[in-house]
Length: 244
Image 1 (cartoon, rainbow, N blue to C red):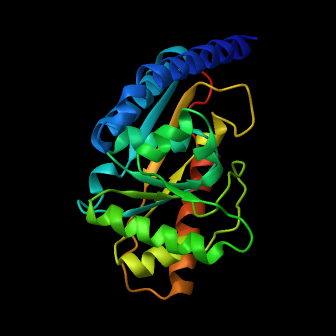
Image 2: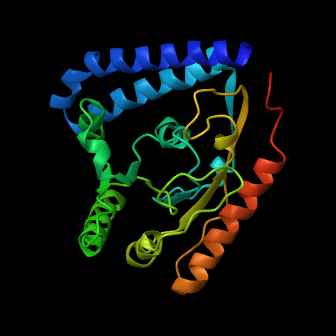
């Protein structure tokens, strides 16, 4: 009952805060990109405040200080909606590869477009077009010294499960010639992908050693998948205290 009431309070404040920001920040859609991104970060910082103070859900980051100072591709495990927020919380102006349908959502999609996200249609017959768009937008992001975030599985998976790793991340690795940083976490334990209940505790997000250019496609994909899955499984099996 306590978990249910806590989750109810969290969801009420979360959606209330989101709706409030959606209207208050509308003028930023007419401003340059940098101002719109600051608005998005303001909204997301509020979300993490709500997580901390209402839900009792905290963040522990490992490996952040060891990240390369140049632009990188952040290839992250995808378990919940939580990790779609955290990169804007940690980085000033990342660009995220996401499904195109999200841009069609009123307000939310407008901000995603203004923030320079990379839409992917995932429709049959548009694979080549999607790849070309991904590479062009990602190359532009690197030139602007933005971090690129991609979820190699393409869709969320339950903690302890592994989806199919898609080849788009390998194309980025070969064409952009920048390091790929595997990112593991255990957010799905606390923020389930289709669950109303959110659990208090500490989500651990870990940036793993970068994979530098030079590997073959097969070796790159094998190492990326192994690094992410091994560390994610470790974080899922041995998380910090979940219930508080």
